Amino acid sequence: MIPARVAIATCRDMPEIDPDDAPLIAPLAERGVEVTPAVWDDPSVDWSAFDLTVIRSTWDYPRRWTEFLAWTRRVPRLANPAEVVEWNTDKRYLDALAAAGAPAVQTVWAPPGEPWRPPADGEWVVKPSVSVGSIDTGRYDMADPEQRELAGRLAARLHDAGRTVMIQPYLTAVDQHGETALLFFGGRYSHAIRKGAMLGGPYQGVPSLYRREHIRPRQPSLAEREAAEKSLAAVPFPADRLLYARVDLIRGPDAPVLVELELTEPSVFLRHDAGAAERFAEAVCARLGIA
Image (tube, rainbow, N blue to C red):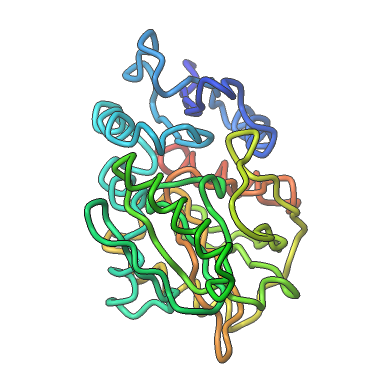
């Protein structure tokens, strides 16, 4: 029997399968599925030769967003699908989720060509609307003139590059409790992790494709499970179109707050839950039509 072939989409700086995704290989092989890493912008790759392409570590796309979206539209049998990726890679989706009832964090947008109007005081996160790995992302105390100026410089640099700036309040609960990321495969809850606070102050550069994270397993609260389900229900795509989803929450004053809903290339932390790789493999096989 000819095995099913699945491509794991990566990037030039990290062409091999990321260690976070490596546990997926064995359970897929046991089910007769052959896994191959493939760089998303490699012109020599024949994407039609695969039964499914799963976007994983394509973390260099933010500065080539238009090119990346064009690639997603050319790839047959892509997970998650191209229309989901286009909607999800611009964080302005948070407005759509909030309008649909999700507990999304308050966000102000500053597109290129519009004046930069920073908040008068308080701690705020400033970053581009198309971004991954906390690149070009900083935490600023707007009451501090020096930090306020640094925030303005970051915004100006992003605007000069034609990128939209987003400003969000810094949720201080993350310093003590961290962030809870809930993972869903094939529309079903799989597991959760705790991610430690990462933003210590103004952006000073990141020497890789992403800022290093401090991860450990976490059992989400009932309120977090409900907030995650509510956020997914607000997505304007059928649940069965989503092979994977990650819902990132931080404690708010009264309830969990959605900070990101990642449907494109999130780390899914397979090494932090004993059954996670099996559940992801089952969802992939269901997409392939393999019992």
